[in-house]
Length: 161
Image 1 (tube, one colour):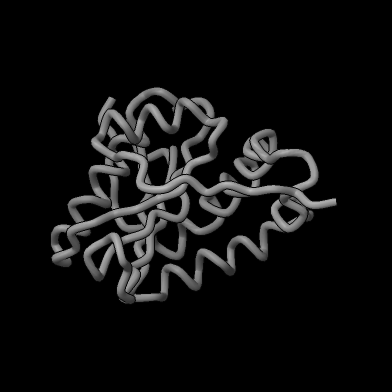
Image 2 (image 1 turned 45 degrees about the horizontal axis):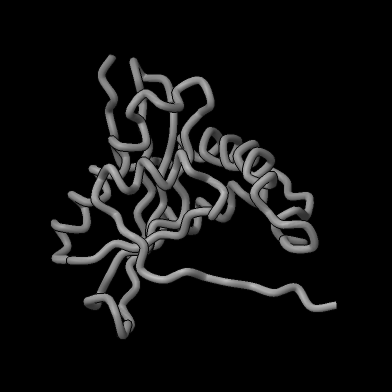
């Protein structure tokens, strides 16, 4: 089973948007009660397709897909952050979405996508990559830790009455 990672094309957008749509449903279990109104709002595939089309056209964005035997099995999007950050070297790359089809979860697809985006960052002279991960998603946290990602800061919240 060889995982092939490549730059996404216009023809890939429907598969990317469909996976994202279904991933949002799965991820909603990580949202604490009372939060995430915008996240939980009903979205349609056309909105998501247009969002990924805009990223595909943006030279400061990366949209990668993973395939096994020509079958779509995941994607990653990332954006170059050109502004100064007090902690990270500028520019840096922010991973926005990393999503794998449920039937391919745990088979190295996420690792392959992350390694590919790291190679793209190096080619652009980028020294830092950051990402966010849900506090209650230990599988994703474990993946990132295995590949050398470490916590930088913790985002905390309080829901006021």
